[in-house]
Each structure stands twice: as C-alpha cells, then as structure tokens.
Image (cartoon, rainbow, N blue to C red; front, side):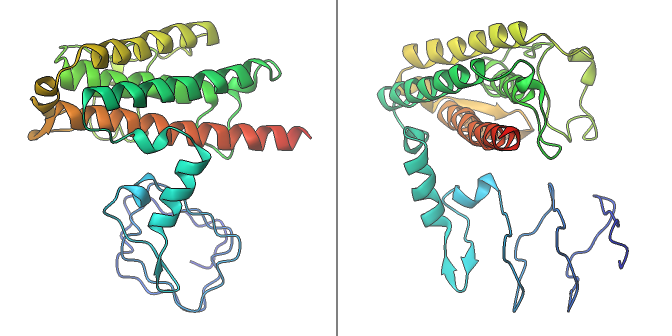
Length: 255
C-alpha cells in the first residue's frame, strides 16, 4: 500500500484494517463503507466529508466527542431555504415543500443560463455534470413516482442517468439511451417529470399517502407513498447541493 497510485474497489475487503502512521493525504473514498471508522490522533486539516446519510436523523458523526450531525442539518437548512420541509407528513406540507424546491431549482437554472455555453457538461473531479445531475433526477422520479407509486411497468425515460452501480447490480441498461441528449431535451424532460410530481402531490389525500407500495430496489420491503415522496425530495435537495457546489467550483476556476 505504499504506492501513491494504489486503488481499491468493491472487490477489496479492508474491514477492520488498522492504519498506523500511514500517509493518506489526498486519498479519496467514494461509495465506500466507512461506518464505525475510528480516527485517533490524525491530521484532518482540509478533510472533506460528504454523505447524505449524515443528516438522516438516525446517523451519528462524532468529532472530538461531539455529535456534529445536528449542526450540519441546521446549517444546510439555513443555506437552502425550503430544505427543512422535505419530510413534511401531510398533503399541504408536501405541496409547500415541492413549491419551495421548484423555486430553488428555477433560480439555479437561471444562474446556469447566464454561464458560458457548455458549462452544463463540465464535470468537476469526476462528478456528474449539471446536465447529468438533472438526468439522474429524471431517473429518480421515474423510480420513486412512476415505478413505485404509480406502478408503471416500464417507468424509465431513455435520457435518465442511472446511479453508478445500476449496471453492476444487474439492472437492464438497455432502457437508457447510449447517446447523450441535447441540453434542450434534458430541460424538457426534467420539466415534465417535475410537473408529474407536482400534479400527484396536488391531488394526494392523507389516505393516498398511507398507501403501501413496493420498494423498487427491495420489492420484499414495503414503503408508503409518503416515504417514496420523501425519497424524491431527499434526492432533489442532495443533488441540488452537489450541483451548486460544482457550479461554484467551475466559476472559481474561471476567475
């Protein structure tokens, strides 16, 4: 492990390994299980941790013995007005939550429209581009609204961007187009999917929200319609945060 270019993937099992006096400066951990990792007497200056599960209300992240997860949640809600509504439990609250989210995305799309052509296709540090992020949210809507809630047999739009493990987990990639869509097409399909969620929430009743549905990734596990909508809202806010983070980096690099 002394090679600075060493790379490990899901075929490697380092569970329970101990690193003592090891230089891990600049290392990247992507899609890895770091639960219950213990760090003692290590230099963490400049460390950048990003995980949507830190603020799920169940996780604990201790820094010098202090659980910082609640502080992270509070700060994210301050930075992104409307985010705190993403776990609303009734139709009226969900309508307010979705309206706030749509307003946030509209402002971000206005920001993108003012940037140089091609910005939407720029990747920062190997992350999805802005266009790919919107395509993934199309796929997320198709998964949790069209497939889970509406039980559409073939729910996916061809421009959807599946998550990285979709193919290796054995799912059919042929439903997605191998050709990258135009930005105009991305905007059109994305707007249509957002309208689908808006229209569903507008008509939803408390009884609708309590209805039981299959988890699209684990069919044996039941989910309520409300839980599916919470997943959509969570995906939206998390990927919005990633998108504006990368837009900030792109603009900073351009000076």
